[in-house]
Length: 186
Image 1 (cartoon, helix red, strand yellow):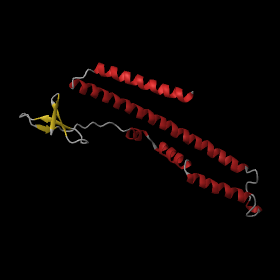
Image 2 (cartoon, helix red, strand yellow; image 1 turned 30 degrees about the vertical axis):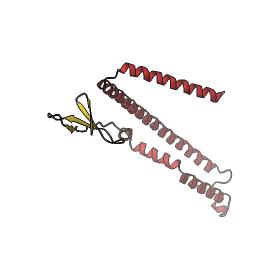
Image 3 (cartoon, helix red, strand yellow; image 1 turned 30 degrees about the horizontal axis):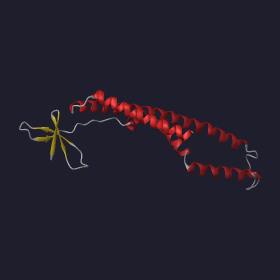
Image 4 (spheres, one colour; image 1 turned 90 degrees about the vertical axis):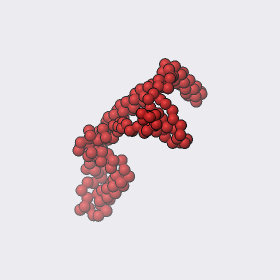
């Protein structure tokens, strides 16, 4: 087993593919596992679930049903039955909405108004969820950058030099992307 000293913490490197195990030194110098710190990042689904009310659940269920093939099949059966009944297939006494089916048109229009409203409510909530996700991603990125700088300093790396190399790599990457997009357009 190899031990590397990083600051006052040892890291035990196992076989390739194994994870590094944080270690600390006993007073006699022998390594012992560190208690694993619990870093709990909030998950966007947990954050968003706390904000949802009954109306949100209802809107989501209606939107989910309206976006399913069952919804399409129900409407095919409904419209077919409506038209057959109102064309007199079951006798003239059963006709309640003769051609051009004004009642059916009004019902379908009202349904479209409500469904579009439910879809917009769900889209607005999805946009809010995306904002929460972006905030959590940003926090994670900041956390990673801070940890990277501290680890780099502990390993004796110059953060400014690393940052300069990162900027150079990003610029080269953007140039390649611009060159490729320029070739595909021309």
